[in-house]
Length: 414
Image (cartoon, rainbow, N blue to C red; front, side):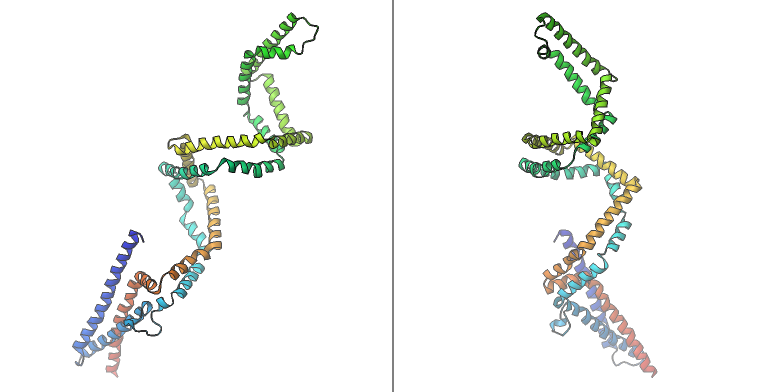
């Protein structure tokens, strides 16, 4: 039990003792008044009758309240100490009551709707310190989870699940659609620029290689000096042409490459022969053992970068994650359509949870009560409701006095 729970129980015990003392004091007062007015005539007879009835009411209600939790005066009177002797049945009844009246899908949805949970979450997340806290709390377990994934497990997943599945799927239409989108958006231009820069530098630095390739195509009867002139000219023109393509974004060669890639993208989607060739190439690639090794190496590199970023409080990844959390919070507050969708999904989830597991959740009540022994159950329940039950004793004393007064009045009139 926590310190807060102990302090709360202490406060409850103190309040229960005060209420018991008050109820007992009224009984004692009624007894003293009765003793002082008993046998006296006149108006004192009414006082004595009221006091006598007040004592009867107080004692009867004391017996009724006490009988819930223990045997009055320790006497084993039948149908007393109800809670200790019937705690299992009471726990089961309380469990059924909670399940049937509180843990229902209708109540859960109604309460969730009135609580405006999504908007509250959005407001909380939209504050930068809170977003940073979310990222800071999520980063360590995410990093540990990534570290716990071994390369052997990744390799097994690739060999047994991912690569065979990719082999069964027709990837040509997907690749064609992706290539078509890349060409339309011009996303490949950066890669083309890089290839042209590197190609131009390679051509300039590898004259001998180009010369060997071109010379191999020369006829046997041509003189060497002529071959050298041709090689030199071809190399010069190749370097100049690649430089022109590199420096001119609107060069016809670039447009021709775009048209070629666009046509390839369309063929991958609609031309059967191209699709078959692409699928055969895919199968050969996936069957090569180096593919899985390469993917494992890529995964290991990505994991290392991500884990390092998660472990660094001021990393770009964590800053961007915090910004994304703030942006999500702002959208949850301002975007009514998004908030409505999130509310609907959340309500469905809570409704399913309550409908499917509500009964099991409520079993916590009966299982907890069942673990208590009879005396402990009675003490805990009395600690929570006993203070209010003392009002029954107080009311019994007051009502008994009034009833005794009324009976005395009737008796005198008759």
